[in-house]
Length: 315
Image (cartoon, rainbow, N blue to C red; front, side, top):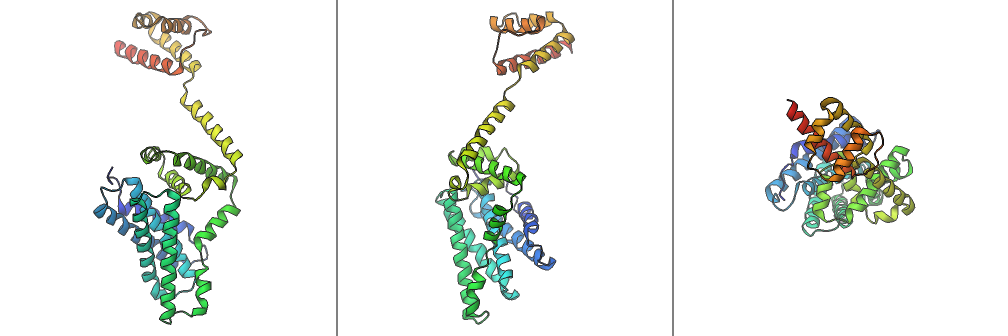
């Protein structure tokens, strides 16, 4: 399926807005704006490149995920550059190399159909390698002192953010993280086309969170198995409850049809229905207790049929 719905500029704007919210509070507005600008710039470039060169090879979800990878690493390494006290005139060149390394690794991973965890690890490795090479080049050019390399390379905003989230989760964040992680584990077992279909039915924010969880290496080992199984059971129970129509509810609705149109009209419309359906309707219309059970889904179909037919005949 080709890339159809990717709007590079709008998607890049959303990523840039999100990036600003996570910039360290101590950063002045000038640095915050710079980071947002670079996230936007490289996201647009990536999106346009995918549309021109890879429109038929990737679908919308894959394209957005690739753009998101480039945005995330641009964001993290921009913060590392600033925290590493690298001279301002070298920021642009370093980030350009970072974005290129991330894109090259992402394209290779997706073309080779790597698993999500392997893709994330491969991109991270290439980004860190490119960053380290850039720092060493600055040492050779006498821009920074060799003794500062270790301190500069120790800056890792991505690790710091991961540590903060792990050590200070709120109860609501715990619940959301468990939800997204559980869904991610389940989706990992599905073929790509089914995963895309499921993710297309959730909001963009939820999709990004689920996809982030899917990229975590050995996700299952990072969760308490008993807690996760309890959540899966609860999730299944809620899904079943939400998807299963209530027979009691339809009993009341059939009564409302009777009051509005009369039982004769209803009986005439169901003269040739199966005996089970007629018996169920009879108990709905003329008795307070339903002894004969029908599948809730059949009851729903029956109600919708009668409601539409009765409404049409009375108009």
